[in-house]
Image 1 (cartoon, rainbow, N blue to C red):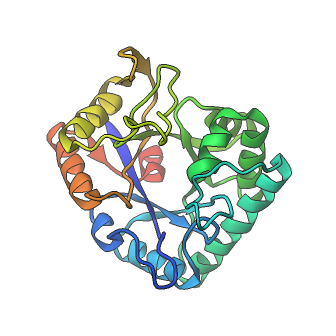
Image 2: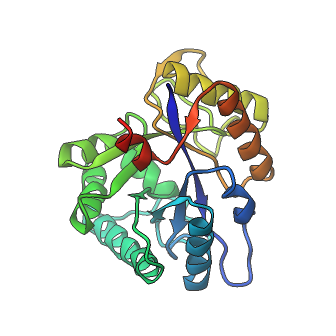
Length: 258
């Protein structure tokens, strides 16, 4: 039986600014990536998101990003591998404090935005990010782009790794995501997005923008929480997976069931 984790980037509101409908999204996902204050989020938002995830039985992970609130962490910054390491350790620690207060454990770490993309392609930065996660706790699971330098680095260092695919993003023939700067980067049709997800999970393949089949491993599917129709997307895709008899379960539970 096919099993897959559904994750969403949450806790990305800040101060008086609210982003996303996370109380609704949490009804459909099994893992929550909680922003840790660098690209989005603040202490109160982190606490509230952790509490909501626990109430919904959703596993929790840190979502460390670049220190770029204005750019939402989606702009590349010239950082060294050491700086990347320090940023990831710092942000994991911030979320871990709230989890400790709530008596909950952390399942995973998934870098955000530009940090995620940079580490997917840069071997040195990928190793630094993976090392940061390992040094905080070898039991943490590293979420990274399927088949990327980041997942490779995590596996080489001895971490459990979840290869991630995206419901609402298009792909290039090398397995990378189409840059957001391009007009065809996002899938806005929920039926096409669901079709893509089902094929990635069932067949381990995705059609690229160059019309070539790209093999990939789909352990966890990202459902972005900040999209215009995020809740409707999440509900529809979860429904399609159920129709295809694909079990939706947290990654850590899926691995335990093997």
